[in-house]
Length: 455
Image (cartoon, rainbow, N blue to C red; front, side, top):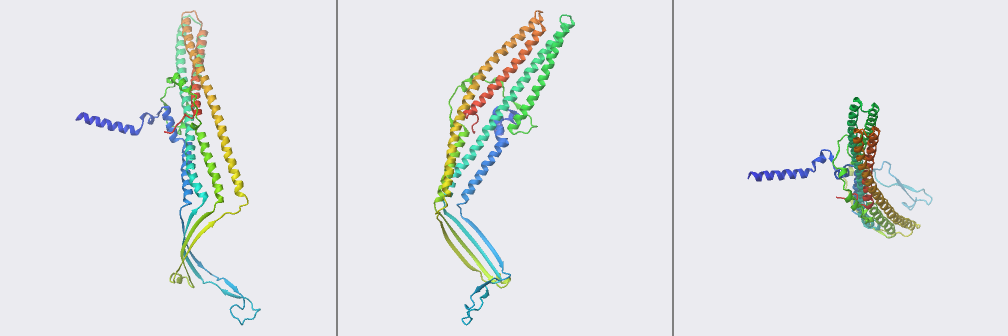
């Protein structure tokens, strides 16, 4: 029984941990995938794109609202301070009036008038409205794809910044190792100098090399700080929050990466830019149909119901009878001639569609070019990485042999220093090549439309 309670508690704790999410990400530790996910939730460009999508939903609601009943109420009180007069011919009231009598100016109205009314307007048929309803779904699709486009761009920026910070940290580790190794060699050389086996010049040369290494180490440290600042910016993270990268760039499986990059399949539909253009083409077509629908008649109905009253005094206005009135109207609007305005509008919309199609063709060509460039770049990056890896192995062996020869008295201090310098250069070149390879991988994934997919 006790074991069952322990198991239940363990399962409850596991459920709580799963609902909270990965703890290491909350502690400031981020894998590349977690960094991208964080950026998708916090990057301000994506938030703005999501606000645009929300605004698009409101715009869709506005379009739909035009077809719903429109109800308005009005209440008015009128005080005719000076009652207007109407003029009648002089003889119209009295037949005995001479023919040349002046017109009669008669007051027409009373001092106080009141009215209260409600009006209902309903659209029955309008071609533009129904086309607008069809365009609403396309408009929503465009807003959602724009948000996805922003996410792809942010994922690319975060990935590159992540790799940059990783490489800078690895360079710092290597420099620390080189400083430690040269410092150890300098201590040994000092001891040999004190014993009279080597000259002080050898010690000074090693000290110069350590100073150069320490200066470079400080530069790399500054680069690390800058890389982390850029990464936080791309992630939408406050600059003062700590971040630690958990992925190991040395653990990259180059062989599997080579196999994955060998796939030359390319689908334009995977590129969000191409999908956006397709949606824009649909909107342009609906825009054309909207103009053409202007040739169709439109039908609407209105119903008005209200009361009105009049009185000589303001107080009587609320005691006298109010008389009802009601109006029903059916409105038919038939366009006959608009001076060829719609004709020229249609021509413009057709040109807009042709431009979208040209942009689609141009984008296909651009995607082909990007894919070819990325494929060539990653092939060159693989070749460069292999060469630099061999150079690094050779440089490490040269340093080892040079130290042995120097300790045995058959080599020179300059030979050791040159070997150390070559090793540092080989290390720098290796990680530069590794960084170029990772960036080429990102560019190839972006060109194929595989860099980021919605979860």
